[in-house]
Image (spheres, rainbow, N blue to C red):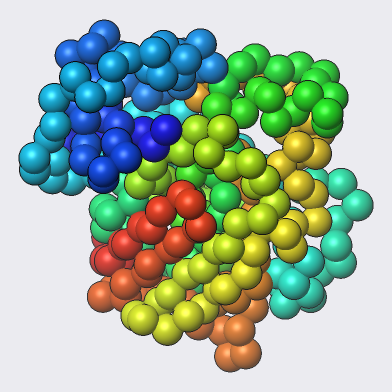
Length: 281
């Protein structure tokens, strides 16, 4: 299934993209908004049991919002692609690097990205998003993918000066409002048989900046979910941004950073495409 949320910001309704590309309204079928228990494996099974053809078609869905209404935790993995680690001059990590974005960074896939006050080094990062569908603690790698509700596109927008040059943790450079475009769809896990075989790309003003595959991940999705569950309980609706491939602005020579008027298009095979215009606070 391809699940989405449509409508003005703060008034989104849950929907489903049918086989013909029509948006079907789920709000009258007792389906809660997509957050927390609303994206649990049980909740997804209840949606599958609906007669999709009987649901109303939305002729003009308008704005597509983030595919999740909110997230309990917005987890992230750093330096998780071999070529990206190389372009930053960093050694490949021996264990996954864990950090977080503020949950308030979550935004729609076509909403504007707003560079925060004082921003000098805004950057782009296409990432595979993993949405947890069942509580997991101390889960094995063999069982980890069975806990995944689905996958989505994330642009892990970053402010590199805030992240690297201002001391402390990376979260400062990752968490400005609009720095977490997510969607357009939450694609359920059964539609993605191998999360390590997805082409991913990002263009800036029509120029290809990132063009890679999730096969270049140092730590795959199953390993990440299992690893994280050794340190914390993952719960339904948690999202994990699993790292970005090479081609970020920070890694270019000379470096290149976002400015007002730039347009990013972010694509992952099977999961859809985002588009954001950059503006300044």
